[in-house]
Amino acid sequence: MRRRITRAFYIALLALVLFPASPSHAESSATDDVHAPRIEGSQIFVQRTRWAMRWIQKVGWDRYVGQNLALIMEDPASPFLGAMGLTPDGRPAAVFRSAPEDLWWYASAIVHEATHARDMAAGRKYWGREGEHAADLEQQKFLDALGSTTRVVRDPATILDGPAPTVQTLQALVEGRLNVAGK
Image (cartoon, rainbow, N blue to C red):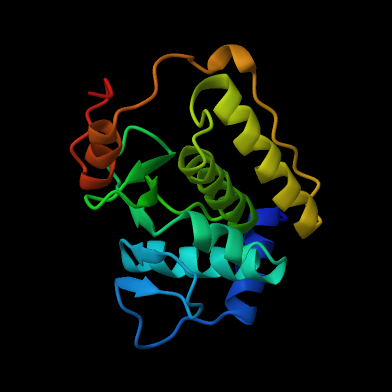
């Protein structure tokens, strides 16, 4: 019986070859670039995030991510697969439940969250249908720059429009205090 090897496996294998793990790996890390966000989480989360950041760097989006996110962190208890939050000192952070094996998709999710942070800093609507549409467009541009055939497709009816999240809610997300109800 022949096994099917998925695209994610090939990408992960390529990442291992191109970006081998450092033996002195720490669980909290900054990548080599001055503009890179700090990375916090489990060892596998930090390593996959570093690999994803290298894909981001390869297509020239590293400055965009670094200018818009101060932190990329793991929170396995997060009610969201990925979300933008704020650190206690008010800096933007991307919070992920885990780091997916598909590094191109994960890198695009980092770009997506960086777009929410960019729009929030610019005073634009960064939540709801309008905010998700803007973030999806940047995510698609990034995937296209990688040469991916993946398309970001979202049913607008699944996006809730409501009031902007409060600073306290965004900080609670980063601090792990946000419950599933979002309060």
